[in-house]
Length: 226
Image 1 (spheres, one colour):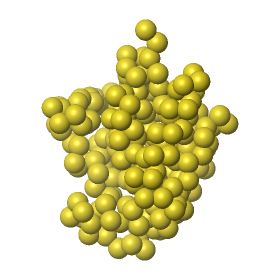
Image 2 (spheres, one colour):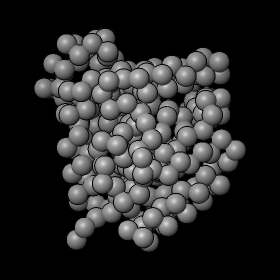
Image 3 (cartoon, one colour):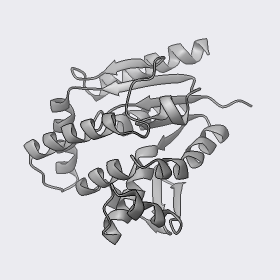
Image 4 (cartoon, one colour):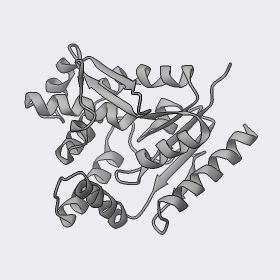
């Protein structure tokens, strides 16, 4: 049986995780948050105090790294680092920069690539990240490039941090969003870009419900023709 896959790429704060998870639930697919995997590597770099942008410091960490993705009774994806559930910790704001930096290292991407692809071989998946449609699953049945204006993405991220009890200044979050955009689009290894056959979904002027409706429409149209 051939499994179907939906790749959702886009910049930081575009709402990929929230929308991809909701889309997967609506379609009965498995949701795979690849950003969480890179955040887990970033967390390890943060914990041991190495420069996440220095390949010579990060690559040696991979040998002893045990990263697992499990789905709990709550149906949510949980990330484990050397046996420890770090699902909540990897969402700390300071880990975002570490995740972006380590994900620019080719050896890190190669280390995690097979883990991501194996999930798509074994399940119908909705997978989100920065290079799913261009590198990880170039043959995905549906490719969506999800984006929104930086100011809108920063506000969404700021509100999310507030809800988690992680106070942050909006201007700081906006500055971080723009810096990550620049880093993700200019990196040598699998830079963030829209795949040629991806559908652009701009949610700048849409709320969560409207954005999900747009993604459902795109997915169902393409799956029907697949």
